[in-house]
Length: 145
Image: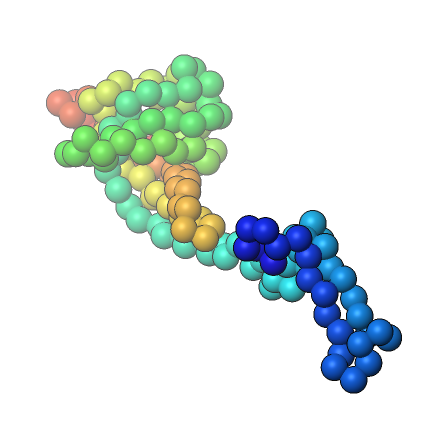
């Protein structure tokens, strides 16, 4: 049916030509193909979660707002990651102004990393579950929060 010049297809049973004869025009082929093809597979989704303790340096923040996405670099590297902070005690200190980030501050955090794989596409989500330790400027004393 997909060859050039073919306009349709006639079918019949050998012993009953007139009673079983059927003509299928070429324009009906897509409907038959759609019916005969298998159902598309649902996308395969897998979620992988890991929690680690990591050292991070603040890069860019939420400009005074306690909620939102922050940008950090992994301490000692140029690797950046975007994360939300869900540690309520730490966010309260940030909102009161007790903590103000500078790029050379150091945070020891419990970081939750969630990778969602949908077919072959991967998305990453980072959450700072707890700020274990906050050090303002590496030359100053450590403040536990």
